[in-house]
Length: 521
Ligand SMILES: NC(=O)c1ccc[n+]([C@@H]2O[C@H](COP(=O)([O-])OP(=O)(O)OC[C@H]3O[C@@H](n4cnc5c(N)ncnc54)[C@H](O)[C@@H]3O)[C@@H](O)[C@H]2O)c1
Ligand SMILES: O=C/C=C/C=C(\O)C(=O)O
Image (cartoon, rainbow, N blue to C red; front, side, top):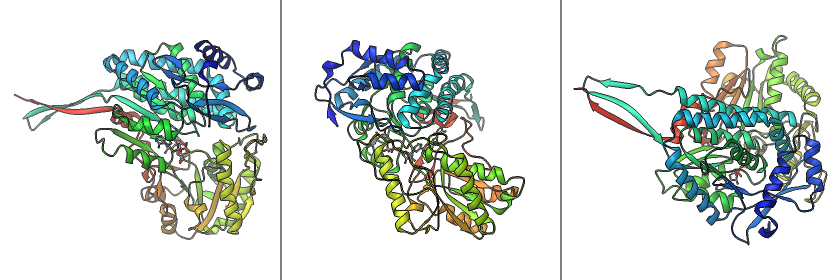
C-alpha cells in the first residue's frame, strides 16, 4: 500500500486515461499503452454517473500487478467510509426513481448495456485477460456470459407474472413484490466481469440500485463497466462502483445501515465475517456464494470405448479450466478402483497435451496466490504424494518479472485427511483417489465442509439419480460440467453458502414480498 496524490489525477486526466484504455482492443495495444506510461494508471470510482477519485488526500492505494509478467498494471485507491457513504447516498436517491421506473424501461436499459458490451467484447476480453491472467480465449467466454447476464434479465422481467389464488372461497390472495432497496454487490478475482454482472444485472432488473465492489486484485473490467454505463446512458446513481480492499472498503460497505442487502461471492471466511458484521441487521438480505472443494466421481462404466474420451475431457476441464480458479472446479477426483490406474495414466496424458502453460493455461491471479498454491505443493512433496504431472514451482520474489506461472499438477497417493484434499487450493492442482463401492464414492465426495458442486461420470441411468440425489452439492453435473441455464438455482450447501441466485431465485434476493388477502365476497 502507498498513498495517492489526487492532484496528479484531475478530472481531465482521469477522462484521458479512460479514453486511452478504451481504445486498446488488442493485447498488443494494451501492452504498449501500459509500458509507455510514465505514471501508473489509477482507477477511479464510478459514483453518480461520474468517474471520481476518493475524496481524502491521504487515501491509500493498492498496486495491482499483471499476472503474466508480474509488472505493475494499475493502482486502486481504497474507497474510504466517506466515499462509500457518498455512493450509498446516490444509490438511495436513484432508488426513488429507478424502483418506480417501468419494467419495459428498465429492460431497455439492460438491453442497451448488453448491446454495448457485445460491441466492445474484445476490449473487455483483452483487459480481463491482462488483469486476471486468464487466456484471451477464456476471457472471451466470460465476456459472452456477462452479455447474457444482462440480456437474460432484460427479458426475464418482461415475462414475469404474479398468480392470484382464491383460498377456500374466503379470500383472494396474491403476492406483491417490490424492489428491496440499495444493495452491496461484492465479487472475487477469478471471473471478475462475469461474476459482478451476475449480480448487477438482476439488481438493476428488479428495480434495486447498487454500490458494487470488485476485487482489488482485478478491478479493471468493473471500472470499464462504469465507463460503459456512462456511454449507455444508465441513469446516474443506479449502479455505483467503488474500488478498494476488503478490510477498508468492503467491510464498511456491507456494514452500512443504509444498505438493504448484500450479494457476495468470495471465500467462506469472508462470508462468515459478513454474516457476523450484519448479524444484528435482520432486515438485510444476504446472499452468500462461497468456496468449494468439489468432487468428480468417475465410475468404471464411463471409461468404456464409447464414452472414455468424454469422461477424460470433462474431468480435465472441470479440474483445469481457468487454471482451476473457478469455485466450481472439480479438484478431488474419485475413481472406481477397477479402472483407477488406467484413468490416472490416460487423464495425465490428456492434461499434459491439452493444458499447456501460456497457451491453454494462463498465469494465476496474483503473487500472493502463487505463493499459496506453491505452499500446498510443498506440502504435497513433504507428504510424499506422487506428482504424476507438474512439480513444486520455484520461489518467486515479489519484484520478479517472470509472472505467476504454475503448470497443471496431478497428484495421487494423498490421504483423505490431508489439507490437500480438504482445503480449497483454487489453482491448477487436482488429487485423484480410488474407491471400491458406490457408497464409498458418495461418502468420500461428501467428506468435506463444502457443498458447492459435483461432477458424476457414469453411463448408468439409475445411478445418475441415485448418486446425484445423495451428493451434498448445490449443483450436480452428470456427464457434463459448467452447463449453465440462468433460470436455475445457483448456490451451495454447507460452508459453500446460503441462498440461491438465478431467475426467480435472484428475484427473491432483490425483492421484498407481501401477501395481500382480499375478501372474496
Ligand atoms: N460460490 C461461488 O459462486 C464462488 C464464485 C467464485 C469464487 N468463489 C470463492 O471466492 C474465493 C476466491 O476469491 P477471493 O480470494 O477474492 O475471495 P475473498 O473472500 O477474499 O474476496 C472476495 C471479495 O470480498 C471482498 N472482501 C474481503 N474481505 C471483506 C470483508 N470483510 N467485508 C466485505 N468484503 C470483503 C474482497 O475485497 C473481494 O472483493 C474462493 O474461495 C472461491 O471459491 C465462490
Ligand atoms: O467461480 C465461480 C463461478 C461461479 C459461477 C456463477 O456464479 C455462474 O455461473 O453464475
